[in-house]
Structure formats: C-alpha cells, structure tokens
Length: 289
Image (tube, rainbow, N blue to C red; front, side, top):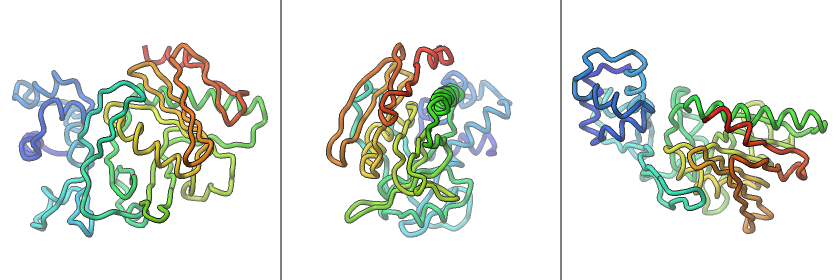
C-alpha cells in the first residue's frame, strides 16, 4: 500500500483527475476530492488501499519485456510505456464505441501472459494487455445469482455441460494475422469437456456471459465480442445493470450472428439449452435495486 504523499505525487505525474481516480478506485468522488485536497488528513486503510491499487495494478513495458510497477518503484531508469484502460464509455448498450485502449509497441502472446507475476491482474485481448480492476459487490452479486439459476436448471435437466466462473483463464490462440487472447469471462458453460484442462480453458466455451461495469463496457461490448465469436462460442450475453438490459449474441458461424435485447423484467432463454433453461432477471434485479 502506498503512502498518501506518494498517491498524490503519482496522480499528478499520471495526469489523472479526481474523476479518473474515483472511477478506477471505485470510491465516491466526494471521498477522493476530500483526500486529495487534504481535507481528510488520515484516510481509512480501505480508502488508501483502493487509491494505491490505481497505480499498483498497472503493468509497464519497455517494448520487449514487461514489469509490474517498475516506472515509479525502482531505480532502473528504463523508458517505460504504461499499459492501462482509462477510457470511459457511457453510450447505451449495443451502441458500443470501437475505441481501443492504449497499446504498446509490441503485440504480446499467451506465453507472455503466463509469464506475468501472479499479482498482475490483466487480460490479454488481441495481443494487448488490459488492466482488470477488482469487481464491485453488486457485480459479484449479479454473477453469483445468474450462475446459481443456470446450475439449478442444469441439475433439473441432468445436463452434462459444466458451469464455470471467473477468475478462470480462457485461452484463444491467434490464427494467421490474429493475435492471442487470454480472457476471464464472468460465467461460462462448457459442454465440450476436451477444452477443459487442469489450468484453464483452451478454446471457446459454448456459452459466455459478461456483466458490464463502466471500466469494462468498451472492452466487453467490442473487443471481447470479437474474441468470443472467433473462438467458436455459440452464445454471448452482455448483462448491463446500469441500463437494465441483457444483450444476447448467437453465433451461427464466425461470420454470422443474431442479436436480441431483453430487459431486467424478462426471463431470458439460454439458447444452447434449446430454451429449457432461462435466467429470470426479475430475481436478479432484487439484488441490485
């Protein structure tokens, strides 16, 4: 955990605003403003940890190698680029921006990803590292309740498909000009047991679900959509609590897809179960209102 004086210094050097700090730390803007202005002289440990994590969870690269926290916490003097995801996308569901996060000069591979230290919280999407902030309580409530409903229905129908949850790596190898990706879906269903290894999933699960947050909206709506389609996933759900929507993508092939939109008032059928299983979002809504 960083000292408050270091956090203030880094905020200035990174050029972050109080709004940036609040978004990335998941703290109220009013709290960040009071801490940064000195109005709060001795912030709570939880507050300092959240503000520290804005910087300590970043990955740095010199174009060839990559290091956690090297730019400000060593005396190496190397010229590092910062790999992070500062973009905030506020558009409605489906109308997702095609903007990308900041990228480094080098495209990384799955081997680079697995060489990272354990404390590095990132996803590799099309050869680019994306920072992953710790999920908030509401996000985890939604993920857990959705998974519970799916598992219960599968038990009732004696399904042999397996429900798995993040954090668990899904490895999608690049083909031709495509780059490697290693992502961690919130919820997934694997009917093909051959893609499940001792360490991770290699290839596309049949069903993938992501719950959006402000910091992941662009990544989930645009970049991971293409990764899942390319990986051979049959169905991809984007759950948007902010707008009360569920966007369901069904992939007939790598080039063909169908899109349907639901609300948190609907029971949404899971296509790969032939509609036998559904997620009742009225029940999910009870945990987030």
